[in-house]
Length: 138
Image (cartoon, rainbow, N blue to C red; front, top):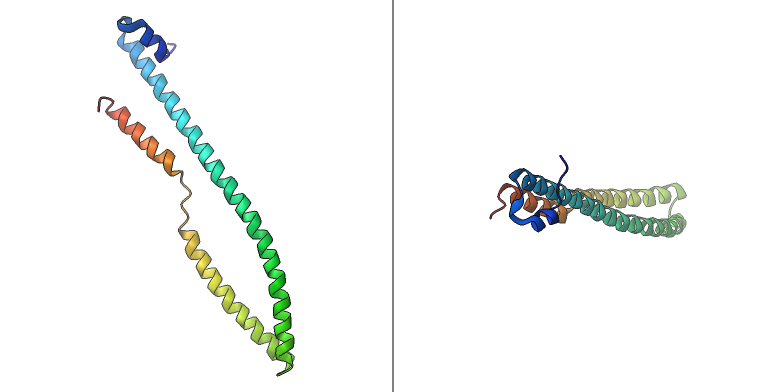
């Protein structure tokens, strides 16, 4: 049975059967859900694009920061080597970096747990559509 677009049902007025009306409603609901899926895809793609660009910038900043910290650490080791043995100076600088790494790891882990990847707008409209489909007269 071919579905009748809602425009044809409206144009025919009262000459439509219950089956034709049901077919038209089913077709409209299918179209609505397809559009919701497309909205979800678009929403997720936009967020992924933004996240990708931000990650690239973080990568560049991370590399530059790494180089700064590498040379700063080398300067700290050489500076401490003037006061104590070079091995102990290197060990102290390494211990400081271990503490920094542990703190950053904990903070990153906490923030990662707060990430919510679901498309909020799409979920809300799907809930509204499902509620309307259950009770179309409300």
